[in-house]
Amino acid sequence: MNIRRSLSPVDVVSIAFLLFLSALNAVFHARVETWWILVLLNIAMVGVITVLSRLAHDRKTRLLVGLHRWYCYPFVIFVFKEIYLMVRPINPVDYDWLLMAADRWIFGVNPTQWLAQFANPVVTETLQIAYFSYYLLFLILGVELYRRFPIEEFDHGAFVIVYGFYLSYLGYFLLPAVGPRFTLHDFYAINRELPGLWMTPWMRNFINTGESISFSMANAAEHVQRDVFPSGHTQMTLLVAYLAFRYRVPTRWLIAVLAALLIVGTVYLRYHYVVDLFGGAIFAILTVWSGKKIQAWWEHAGNAEMRE
Image 1 (cartoon, rainbow, N blue to C red):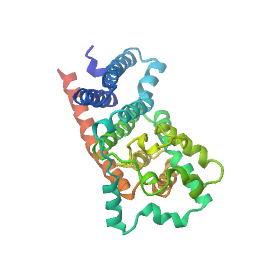
Image 2 (image 1 turned 90 degrees about the vertical axis):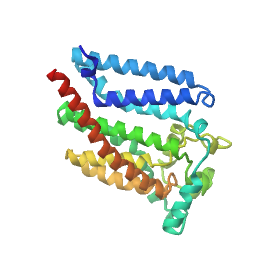
Image 3 (image 1 turned 45 degrees about the horizontal axis):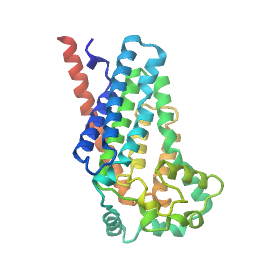
Image 4 (image 1 turned 90 degrees about the horizontal axis):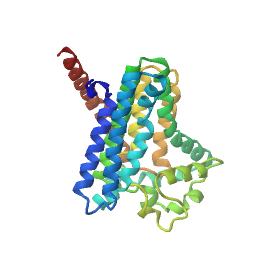
């Protein structure tokens, strides 16, 4: 059987992005110390995706089909950590100065500093919980689509989400930045300056760990992931909300409320400049627009192949 027929759009865009990262590693091998390890891992992941898609297509057991549909969610985390090892060696300049200048030009102030006057433990706790819910929104949407809709609709939703992640990762290469919690504020004083109630410290530590830093580091800004522009939290949250309302899933209003609070929290909690949010919104629109074209092309190619 032609292996192409077993591949989903998520498989195709994932394989393409892995090959792109491998080529980037090869081109900048003099800067990326672990480039050959990353290339080998990427090749291995391409093999895993290809074999899994073939097995799921041929055998169609619930386990294999489920693995094929859900591997993409942990997979984007793997890619996120790979680019952590690549962004700064490839583009060692931080562009926070440009993002701060854009915010000041638009608003006349630094928004995170201006918002500090409204700091309140209840507000902080609420927005930190909403910001943390980012990691759950994809699962909520995915479970809803998987349980209630034909598998083709789940595949469409998964493609939009995964493709959106990859586009945001490209932005990190183009405009690496560390964010206002490092440039406009004292990162180590945030628990004192912006206290929450009960869960805020734990959630901050969890998020910091995901970005390869901790409050115990002497210079966390040197080690943090350069993932500020575009705001992936804004971009991906808008995409989740778009899909939730497109498919009218029962949790769409919960997702909408969390999305609104989350986007406000990205600035209030000092993770992002406001211009990052604009970038995230633009990237979300680009994801939907170009994603439709890619999926239409893939479906057309598949139909043409079946007629031959």
